[in-house]
Image 1 (tube, rainbow, N blue to C red):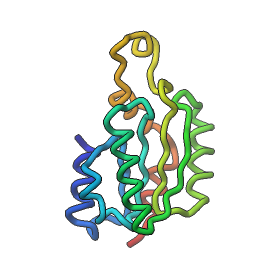
Image 2 (image 1 turned 90 degrees about the vertical axis):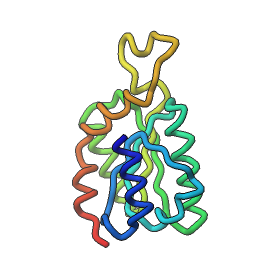
Image 3 (image 1 turned 135 degrees about the vertical axis):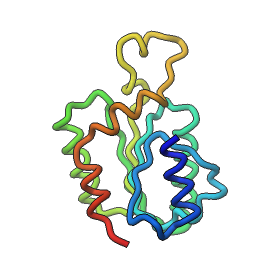
Image 4 (image 1 turned 180 degrees about the vertical axis):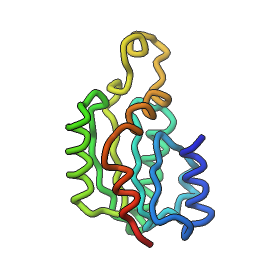
Length: 143
């Protein structure tokens, strides 16, 4: 529940962190207003039936309040070099929020992809947390 804790802390204490990384998270969008203007990097799979719609709703709330959101769609099967290039390109836009979604199904591997009950929530983390450059972006942010 790291993403929920990240969202909850940023909403309750909006001045605590200079930046945060939300991976496959969800929170009621009606409470998302304090995220406006926050430096966030958000990654989620388009096949995650709860976190993806939830993150889209949060992005809508903060965009309507004036936050600039950079968006990209990535293939979860990309190479480390491709992900690093994707991060660099996204960070170069200098948006307050970087919202990268993985193509539906691209975070699932082998037997996961074959099952009718494939869940793309848990399969997002092992990919997201290996992507080079996102942590560096987080640590470069200032209040």
